[in-house]
Length: 517
Image 1 (cartoon, one colour):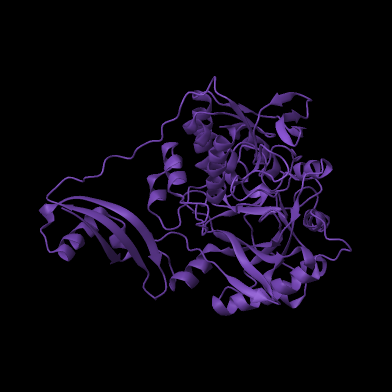
Image 2 (image 1 turned 60 degrees about the vertical axis):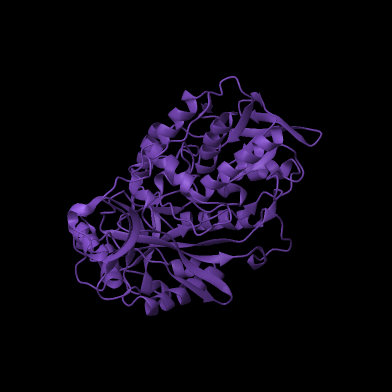
């Protein structure tokens, strides 16, 4: 007999099968020997009271083996001689579109401006040493996309694209821990993701797909409003009846190219602000109502949102036990992001705190499709001008920022190369500055202890989402002007993270198949 039950346990009880199995037997009123099998289906933390609880949903078998079979791996077809589909970008949308094409029986050919994930790690190490930034191989560009080195959180609130179950299964098939299948907020970790990305690449190549690194898109081949292929920056022409555009939100040259070709683009809302860093012990004490977290609880996270003058101010990509990293894609920009290793064991907690920006908020005579892109670039250049030489980031203590004074001393930070004190309250644009200041005061009331000069603001967090949308038809997922052009993922304005981008990539591949048939 199989039953599903829910247990509310202490962190220690939930940490061990040996500890919670007797509690299962007691709840079901059976002997311990009668329990032949248990499996955790879902796991979540409830930290609302003073005593933190773990909610476990379990499948339990009594006097019988489980009916379910082992995990079924997705089967791919050999597509070496199948019709090619070009995919621009090897981020989550591009990689998962490629895997779905393998399932369907079409040949994915991925064009990636950056390097393979191992070579990319060496270029990222150079950024941390404050050496020259490679504009095509960094935290944004290269195999795996921006998500490879920015934490690997797999949670998405969006349900309209479909379930994330298939994405999680694919990740476990390629080396991710099966814990991501049960945790309410699954997380892989930036130390584990490169190996998983490499495994996905190996699957694509094994079954006849192709990946071309160090190959940058220059233009599209279009005849009679239909895609015929692409031209690379080496002037190589590659033909295909379908192109999936999955370039990510940092590939600004793609937006400029589309605009020059007269392909319709739209300005959209986005968000910018700063990244804030607290001691992890402080966040633990606030969220868990304790002086010491103990060995059975993970590093605490938080989510905050506040309306200030009709615009949202909210936390973004919160990284418990993480570090802040330099995420610029050009030498004259300063952009930061956050990441966490799989065990989330650093001394710091960081999160983006960003302000909603709508096209009409930007002071300009004409609102055009690229107005947000221009505003974003100016913000990043401003941060660079107010930081230190190279990739040294501007920083300020939180209370000093709100009260408008320069910080004489900054706390030790996880950010490498390093941080430098800066009057951020003076140079951050007023519409962002004012809302951040009011937002921080409100957050301090919601989380007692959050508003403190122990927290450091580091600038700037500007790549939360694309300020541009590439239009597509709701049913066919094609651009309304160009047959065979399929915008997909974050860079096209249709996703917001690893999971939603991956789902969007899979959905796009299905629509490509329908179009080619």
